[in-house]
Amino acid sequence: LKLYEIIKAHIPKTHDAIIYGKKCGQSGRTIAKNVGCSKTAVYNTLKCFRQTGSSTPKKQTGRPPLLNIPSQQELKAFVQENVGLSARIPRHKPAMTEAHCQIRLEW
Image 1 (cartoon, rainbow, N blue to C red):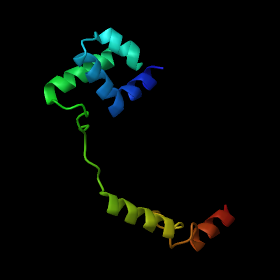
Image 2 (cartoon, one colour):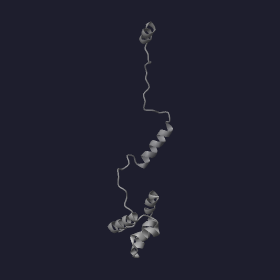
Image 3 (tube, rainbow, N blue to C red):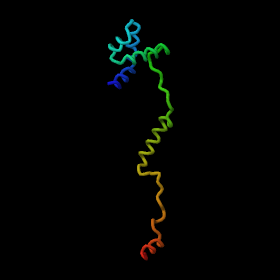
């Protein structure tokens, strides 16, 4: 239920409804009850609106992706074409040499 409330609070219509409720003079608890999200989500939305002046949330920060979208698509196509390709290098010599076989037979 909490995750649903968090997701619901990030919908643009919900942001607009929260801001409209505050402009009409409603309290945070009343807005939360009418919109259907937590009062913390209401107060966080109002705080963001006061700071930025916009009802849309800020872009999430974080580490940028390693590959851009065209590179991701190219890599995906390459992997799907070469299904049997592996990073493992096969051995070229036999597991047992003739000398090993003779020693084992004599033992």
